Amino acid sequence: NIADGIYHEGDTNTYFSFGTDSINFYAGSLRMLSLSEGGTDEVIINQDSADINFRVESNNNTNMLFVDGGNDAVGIGTASPRSILETDGTISINDSQTALTTGDTLAGIDIYTSEVSYNPPSGRTNSPINRILPVTETSIGDAFGMAFYTAAQDVEAVEVMRIDSAGNVGIGTTSPSATLDVVGDIEYSTEGGTATRILGKDVNNKLTATDVDILVQTEVGTYINDRQFLA
Image (cartoon, rainbow, N blue to C red; front, side, top):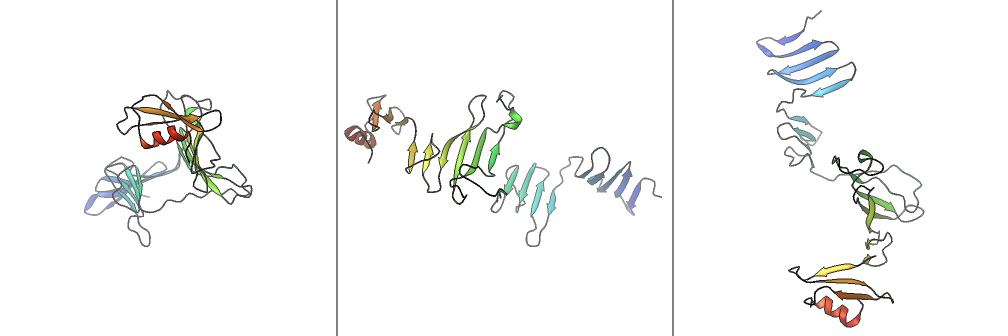
């Protein structure tokens, strides 16, 4: 039997100790690794929150996984992460769905907030405020666009922009039919931002310009004014 631990001879601050259903490994008096079995079964690195880095090597990368203990950052393929997570290389997201059909969304990016003022019907913890999701465009799942979502005050995020598989961009529409397809008015101004015009459609679905400030005299504004449409 071992009473409380095993110490390195001549180096008493390097040892591992035993507790009730736990083992702790120390080096230089720093608890590097803890194994705990009980109410919560855990393997814990740096349980005392010291400035200790954690590194995992692969066959060809000495920093396959790197945790910067002093800067609270994680690097994949890098030992100098500049944010909470940084990767030196491509990140892949795989969606395991099969038998996709038109309009199905795939695995993408969801962004949540901890702001307590945001109260959508499904609850803040279940409702991302922004989403970027691939979306299927065909009934056999062989063409994909990208959908972008935003959330207005206290409502679930909804799609506001779509880039389809042909590269067309739709704002306010999920099926853009031109390089830029906008459902709604467009506002533009001079470079200094001091004069503005609103673009919209007339009763004949022609693009028209309405003066908000008569000082707008850009080439685009003049072209639209003269022809009442863009060609």
